[in-house]
Image (cartoon, rainbow, N blue to C red):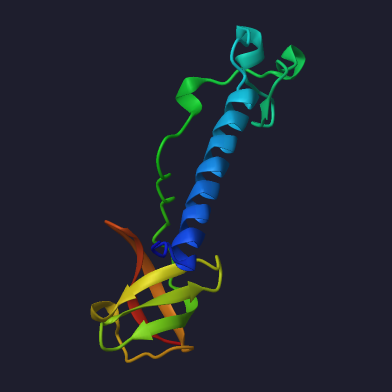
Length: 149
């Protein structure tokens, strides 16, 4: 009589495969048992409360407020126009000489303003105090006529 060709590794892989199939079948049966078929429409509805949270109970009518659809702004709001005022003071927070651009932190409004090397009246570096004017460009505010303070 011949020896069986099944080795211990083959038997082990086969038992693992069968165990995996059993686990899969058990999970399938559990999902079917937990499924909530046959619910009424009221049980399936979800509501949004006054804070925007999903709830299973209808919202309180007394807390509802009317919202005008025209007041809803979709997209990114436009930057507010900055007035081309008197020269402003600021500090260079970043400047890259190789690329020719940087940013100035306005001391008055604490807003970061873009500056290009073409708009410099004197050589600047990071942490320099500067005087500049603001001009609205196609991508937002940018500093012009920038010089060291």
